[in-house]
Length: 312
Image (tube, rainbow, N blue to C red; front, top):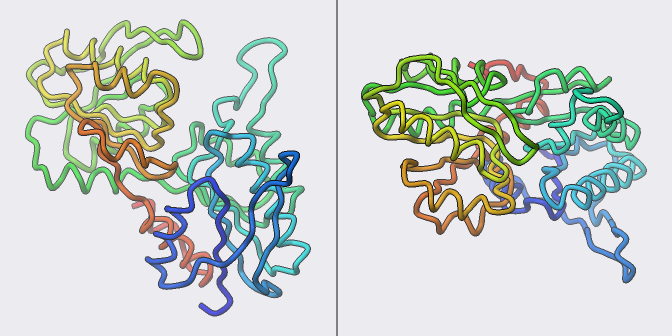
């Protein structure tokens, strides 16, 4: 592992440290700060010539700052003659803008993919993309991991009976089906109508949830409006205990307040793909670590081994 080098920006250094602990390697030293006028300043303080370099940097809020840090770090490492640069992006920002769903709007996910490639990234390692087709936006290899097994392990230990995996919209059906298969649960889908980017209304529930224990599964929670609407619809339909397992807990705006005031929600489970320091003290929120999953993927990529077994 002497040719392996792991760096981190300021987005989620705790996760990077946890990954290094799993791999039993040292987090490499780099200065990632700001000049007096606010421009990002990067200096790699380690010799990386000929090394296999991984940069752990989710592009979570502040998205623009974290993305620019990642791009500049990639450029610095490329110019320092790193052999291969893998951008480890546990949460891929701008993923919701993955198609033209209205006139005169950008496809920002493709733009970000282009920026990463031009900066000098040779490979991307990411997790639970908002839209799977984003992998095709890259002209470099992409390893797309899923956090489903991390959450399934948690629910398996709880041994909950009469489980139903619920997709809060059509886009999460595949993820809900994966949960249902692994915990031997039924499947249900909520038909919702999006009023605005921040608000959605639950319309109908397809599937049987009356008298059942429910797990709402999704890839992302931002303001929490969709989750609250889904919980309300499920309670109205007669669901007993309601849990939510969501990969990326952005929890922006009034999200924490909404979750606290959502009486029907037993617990919200999120991963540490983005920093969750404040949420760890909230009794309604449980943070599960994906450091082991990412560490295993990094080890396999470095050793030129298959990563596909992590999808099972």
